[in-house]
Picture (tube, helix red, strand yellow):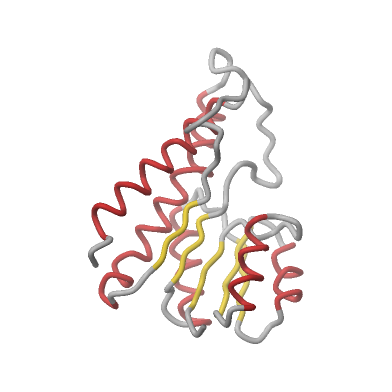
Length: 178
């Protein structure tokens, strides 16, 4: 209650991100949500305008990450909770599944950007203020694909999600005591 949460990848009404946003709002948090498309504003209407904020952002772009964090702080206050849920697919971009032998550099780099680099950038953007205040929670949504199982044609997704677990462990070692 009373905390500010930012949930990425919350555009789908049936998705994990929006489910997290609803639970946080019901628990009394002020909630910011983001997605790549305008449908995020319909999700905000469902949450209720009071104590919420919505913005579109392409989290593969550093300037969008910085803008999202700044706008969230301006609208709701310092970010206490970050749910890095964005990933898997990006509305409006189509990268068909390919084996690793056939995946192009652009598809590989984009898959890493939306599933791993975006989480690192957002975490990096909010961590200093969290550490100064002595409070913060960062949740990274990963998958069993990569760390536990593999799916043919999903090599970049699996590699990114396994990398996300490594990032989580590194962050815990570096900042958990603060």
